[in-house]
Image (cartoon, rainbow, N blue to C red):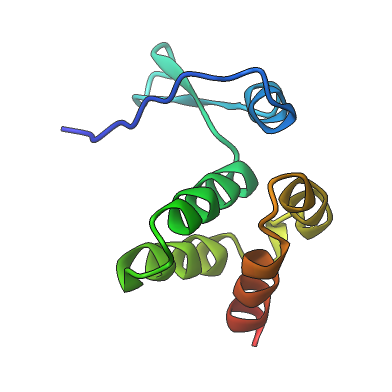
Length: 103
């Protein structure tokens, strides 16, 4: 069993970018069943957006963000995230995440 969150794209630069950057992954060992997933960077940006909308009160979403950053490590495209965070007015949260996750 897998949990899946589905969000409908809006006509916003972030939504268009997120859709264009999806990653196709196999759902089984044969590789015949596949699905598209948001990139780790776009997952972080979306979670930052929801964290801000939730009033930045809950510690659980922040721990999720730190977890994604830790698992992805140096593979994350911080430049892309900084550019997109600026369009979403999330730059302050992204920098806080960068500081906490990178040491």
